[in-house]
Image (cartoon, rainbow over all chains, first blue to last red; front, side, top):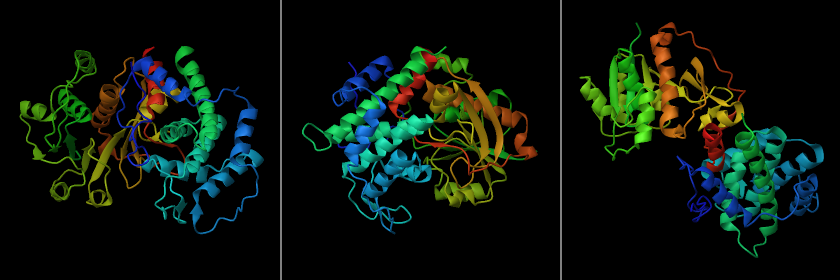
Amino acid sequence: MIEYKYNQGDLLNNPQNYNFTEFGNWDFLNAFKKSRNKFSRDSDMSSDLLQNFFKLLIPNLDIDNNLHDKIETDKYLKIILIDIFQKNLFNYNHIDIFVKKFELTKKLFEKYNEKFIPISKNCFNLINYILLSFICLLCYKQEKNLKYLNTSLKLNDTLTNQISKNHKYLIPLEYLIKIELNFIDELIEEKILNHD
Amino acid sequence: MIKIGIILIENERSKSYIQKIINNKIILNDIILLTDNKNSKTYTLEQRTLCLQNGFKIDESVEKTLTNNNFNFKKFNFSEINHPELIKYLKNLDSKYFIFSGGGILKNEILNIGKKFLHLHPGIVPHFRGSTCFYYSILKNNDCGVTAFIMDENLDTGNIVLQKTFSKPNHKFIDEIYDAHIRSETLIDVLKNNLLDQENFQKQDDSIGETYFIIHPVLKHIAILNCID
């Protein structure tokens, strides 16, 4: 019996590097789903789900959108998310900076300077990981670019590693996993089950 | 003829490069082996058989291949491509080009010694830059590709020597066998057709394209199952 191991250990202090990961056939994908289903929200995948999730994360739109020389990650990511929902504007230049920051270190810091160098050592604010994962899933929905689904999977490994029952971010995580699993099922259907 | 050297390390890629160079009777000016003498990997019968079908012996070390073929080669007991001893040694060699086969990311110090480094990248640039591109290419295009380019200071943005597209594999050993196979086939095309002599390289537009990061195991599994299921 294969166990999904990529969300185990202390991932914020000892991140996964995902180098040369072993092949475990369908057993691996089943183990992944079983691991994720512990968090999956029991609701239909619909546009309401995305809207509801957005409202949950950003209950009011009263965010100071003046970006100063210090980049506060949660504020910055919320502005990106509001642009997507209100203007259908995907600011890929900025999104890609955060994707790269996370991919290289598997961490998101609370504050960066104008050159996107971390100026805070705090990488434990999970709302940043939730916001970026949601943004990546929306980018994947929009462009079908696997780069974003890839980053979201890694962010969700970190989140399922850090969030347990009664955690204040359990409900947002359940939304994320519902959306992620839906995309993975679609990809499996298209690339394995229905491919020529 | 332009003088070409190769920097080898004890990995599958180097094994495929040097064995196919020998099989194709291609002459190199300088051969360098970087080895940290770590325990060598073992391979299954299925892997060894598949490799033979792809034109190389995966269980034969690079050093053994070089020794068996009576090659003169310089051996260093480290595997870092940016090591000062290697840089000092390369500066005094006649070869203008060196084939790179791994050992880290080339830093400016080695890039600026007056030599050019040929890299075989397993992706068609600019669409597939970065890491583990063959998996992304299988999922997106249902095939894979290799770009031979001259390395510069940025990631996978150097001038293109040759691009080749390959059918996706029908086996699961993509990291160990397929990757080495498609890179080495492209290398042999570059060398047999004297493309480095011609220096008719295509400049990349580094403002377009996509850079991928190391693939998550879930996407990797979907790609491999797409090949074998």
